[in-house]
Length: 163
Image (cartoon, rainbow, N blue to C red; front, side):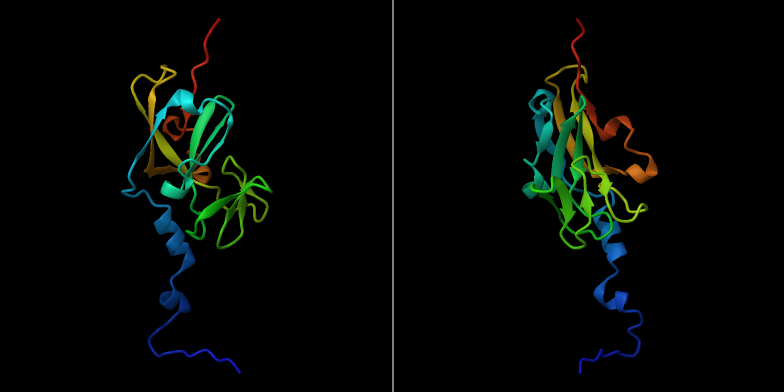
């Protein structure tokens, strides 16, 4: 028979093991994470999913529809690492197995589940320069649930040449 030892004064088990919501909030809070210089915007103009900084910085880049976004690969509810599943073409939380599209949007599960956070993208020069240098800043996050994904700093819009 397996039993659970309860010690006086320990209170809720989340106090002992750590509350997963608190861990997730800590992982997704604006922090002192080092910014990542990712080079010129033109390097990322081709539509696709770029995992160049996934292992080193926990950030994936997604270029599509004339826009570049940087997704923080931390589960918004668990604080666990999120990895790309090539077979499913989805991101998957390593702890909860929750899934997200390559745009960071929650996929399946509860409707009130949060999407992946976007990192701020800063420009090293004029934003209308196709070769402007870009910096991804995981220290400043934007959340879809707070209607922050439409803020200018949550993405880079590529310059389209006029005829």
